[in-house]
Image (cartoon, rainbow, N blue to C red; front, top):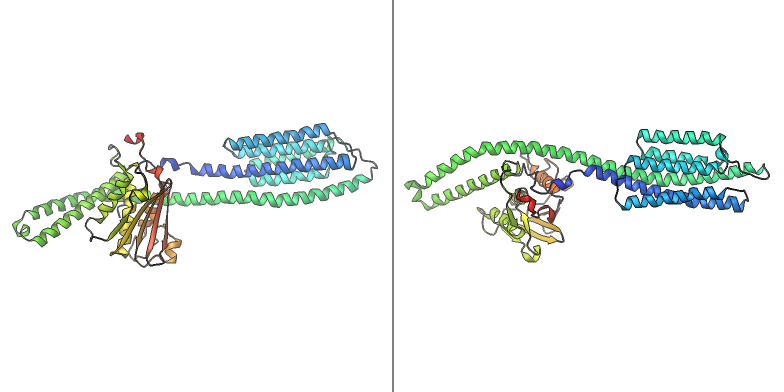
Length: 447
């Protein structure tokens, strides 16, 4: 098929380049949102604890400085919300700073409430666990060092709690340890599981991106081969075209209508081969000096249906589109890659259903939807499961299955997708959906 080097559409690839960093940033944003939720819970828990200890147990606490720490946490949450609303980047350094500030706030609160004797020092372990999940190795170890230094400092520097009688201090300590244990266990399970899920989604996406890069490298190698083949085939095709022209002028042939009809069909086939080769070279970048061809959406699809139908029995292709389905006509770039995608799908359908093929085209909002229907045997379950993967085909010949693989990757470059399913009435449907913005003509496309 003439689709091998269609991996560089005229005006659609550049918008889909730096996808990996943005997805990693999305995972970090989700984790920062979880840290904000945890901080809200910490503020609420501290307010309740301070109220119970100071007013319920009548143990004097310095309310003003401890209230100032709570105010700082509220301000930090407000700044974090503002950060997310402004869509600023959230990297590992931002997460490290957020965890470090939480450690600092916990340390100050412990300083005013007994220091290392406070059972809530166990919450340092929660901060360490969060750092181990969220941060790279160096950042996590820095948090460990910070908590280690803070704990050692609280042993010698703190404001002791004035508990009367002193014997009740042990009972309060045990109660505090129990509350801290329950709180730490619940928060660890809840937040660590959610953060791990965010990171697992990121890792899955990166694995898919790596697989996509390997597939695109495969396409590049196929494109180089196709471009070389196009150059190699150009000369013999030109020679055959000249020979056919000479034959048409020979009296022995020109006087036989059947032979003249066969010659016309052969010349039409030669012209189509030349057009396909020109498309390969254009997609490969051999015609960079030419301005892109500008057309309209209606005309573009009409030309695809008309060009494919030439040389095939009348009535084979049932083309259904028009202004009713496509809406208002728009100016687009006549992209050779997309033409080859649709032609490839029609050729595949023609192999299994030579008597009837249907081509549907419609516009759904900002998306263009193209369907190719046939009356063939349909796709096997294995084919549907591996749809779009290279060499996944029911055909016995070598190299089969590359057509749909290339179709999938080209449409993905446009920011669209390809899907397939078997029809209940028999046959199969392959659907292409892509954003019209990938084809829209812009002034800069004039070159």
